[in-house]
Image (tube, rainbow, N blue to C red):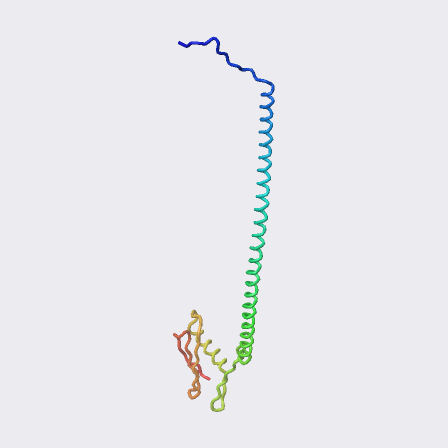
Length: 170
């Protein structure tokens, strides 16, 4: 069971001074909060500016180093390219000098056999050998022909495709 005391009353009246005091404290707290927010914004802004400045400075340093390295690489490349061009020019010049003395194309050849007052050309002997071979072996294609000219026999002996042989008289 709960016992109530009749004479105990709680004073719940609030005076105007207390209300004004509470409102003043509330306003001061708001103002302090606003100042803290402004200070925080200012601190973030200053931090961002400092970070941006540091980043820009670091970027400038990196750019300077990159320029130095790039310039060195370009200079090295130019130097090596210059040496390569010089050696290539020298090789071309030497090659040109050596090829001056060589034949650039095959000369026209004309072989004529002279024996005991008679003469016959190698070309005519080759034509006769091919004609004689074509008359005997019609289906064989001639890929190679080798002539053996024997003036003492007044004849040329031939070998066609390293397989077929024959004789042609002068």
